[in-house]
Image (cartoon, rainbow, N blue to C red; front, side):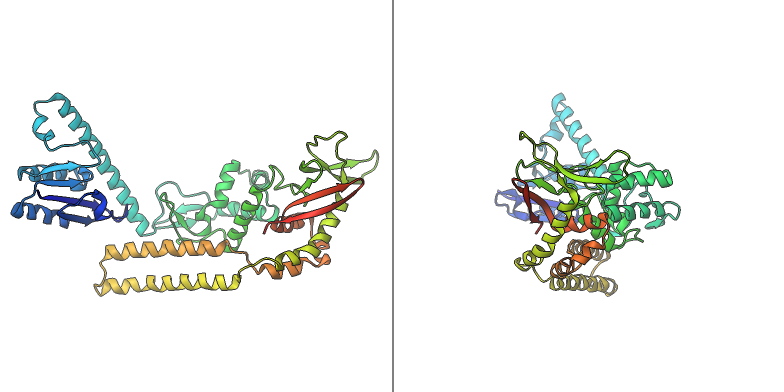
Length: 437
């Protein structure tokens, strides 16, 4: 018994399967990538040597259209070879029996409709894949702030400043909702909070293209947001996800960080004023204290002053006790890998000209290199901008904190502190800082 198998895959759309995918021994495996040269060889070998069974995964692997598939099916079965389709309900006798059996005819018609739909879908996906290889924008309307050019996105001078102001506002205050409100107040541009979050995370505004398959190609067009700002936005978003709702944009730097050690309730900042006096008094009080009597509020300024003192004393020791990798070495390694891949990318055109690579293989290799470079740049962007030990030395100086505004203090507190726990003993209390690292 002579059993042969045929595998087809389009390298634009999928990875080639292993020849051992059948799970049983076959006498010969013919495999095509993109073209169908091996299929033609299979037909020639069957004509001269013959075969008993042909294994294929799907009928659409036999051609690019219903006509091609039908022609090759009849050609193979005319040689007396039984076709076994592993991922579809089809048998060699269906074509012969369809004329006399109504159910078989209906099943075959249904299968042909599925194949026709899949062939059209594959043709569409191949077109999109070829656009990806050329780093062309995906189909659809250009994101707000851009317009479509001939082969790339072009900055729209009328709307890009609005997007830029949105990013700047978020970087200053760390508030997504606040930045959304600011756009509506200043420019009359009303967007949903979900749209604002999409702007903050959309690779397009960073000069990159992201495709539906999840792959990103860097530096394909002019960016509205530079790499340093983008990295800072990513850190702000990660930090805000760890905070209670509505505290990301709170005006007070301790908001969302303080927890009562006695009742384990989160503490909120409240303000109190006296009649006919403009002075405002701030307090931290538990939001949902279960105790009776409830845990008392504590003056905000006292907690703030004690927090700064604790950071100055504890942060350098905490950083020194951690095994922190050499960030300069990590960055140097990533930059070296990026440079190596860019050098390979630059050599592809000469390899194509000399005939070492054909244009399709060169395009695939260039696309793979560009996506790998994008992944390395992403790893580079998430690293802290400077050495953590150097930052710890700077922020351990009390004068550093006294020169900051509340929004600036909020930024640095959340950069280092996960939680501040207030431990009470009668009327005496003390702080325990829980750092992020």
